[in-house]
Length: 373
Image (cartoon, rainbow, N blue to C red):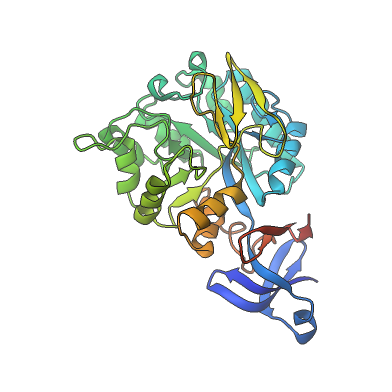
């Protein structure tokens, strides 16, 4: 039996004091009162669940599109692990069908090898809107083909998240994907409120990077943003790097949707966990300037944000409690992807993916399935 004792532990019932996590074979078996002996060596700070990031394009100098291999995934996962991401969906940005298949093969290998932090894959595209393509390569944006459907519907690649523009696919396609167990999110879309509403009613359950690359909320056209805010059951990813979304817009989304439906994401590129400055990207390049990534024309191109940075920004700049920020970084994304039975909280039966943060929300320690990193 392995144990971790801390002054504060964020449980599903809130913060508890002087508790011990009892761990067997990487799983939390119980959370109990600490013994006197354990209290003598307890860790100062708060234990919170490891982060779950559903949008990770790269890290450690690697972009998944450029190197869709298992070795590349190991590098990406290691880069993000140091920032508290203990579960992730490697994300493939819009690309050709061969790269999509190769990416699926890489994730399949990771799943078969029981990689401790890779839980599946996020295909962000290629079934998007050219009007809201952002940094996505327009020549690869298309409608679904049979070969791509076969890739999406593989049963050996863990959890699958697919971002689509509702105006670029049929409602029957969304229903088919959902029937296959795929989680469908809406993004890179210029669709009307009505089109987005129809897609949600057809089974889409989330929005990719709320506010960014989607039809805006206006007085006479609520757009995708309006639908995301209005539909209570819809989840929304939020990039809290203060470049993608104004802090007050982020604050509004959290106030409207709550910690149960807003999930922090990084949209991280290869720059996270590396000294990389400039990255070649299809027909352009992505350059880091401080904490911002752009192409030469000023278009935002993913982020160099890590998940702990997102939590710090949310706590310090949006006046959100650690309890709520933790939920948005762990519990909510795990629930969105249907992984809440094993990930996203500190409770009996959950993987012992645990973070220790101090009272200033600095990251101190990381455990993955009970193993201190």
